[in-house]
Image (tube, rainbow, N blue to C red):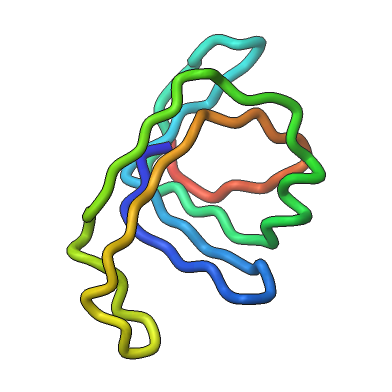
Length: 94
């Protein structure tokens, strides 16, 4: 998923949107998915984690910073490895 925004609350709940993602079956990319969204709780999501890639990608200063709670322009970063999760519902269009 290529993220283009989201937020995380102190209780672990989150929502993220992405420019695009990919449907993967048996380790192979099958087709692209547009307007992807994912919401849930970080700890619950980690409970469904089945694997992660080694190709860590990080970006800093993206989006100009965080403006939540009047913190703007608090520098933020985003990124991480690609994850394999089970039992998680994503929204999007094919």
